[in-house]
Length: 93
Image 1: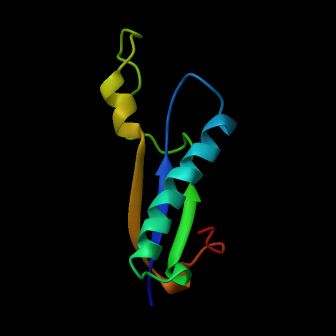
Image 2: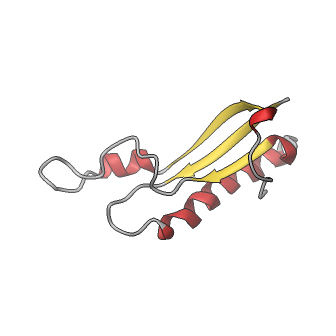
């Protein structure tokens, strides 16, 4: 069976890791609840919050000034299809 890993990510150099774990899980859960409302079984959803551990863009420019576009790219939810053998912890949705 194919499952979907739904992961929320947020990255900022302004704050600790713990303050970003909850928002990333909330972001992933919102997507999971939407998919559930469309008939996707929660047994096929794996929900993770990665906090600031997976940035895809720099939040600051090389000169140290803020990079709003980089921050925007780092506030995201990703959906990755996986095989059921790779299933992680129980869904939170």
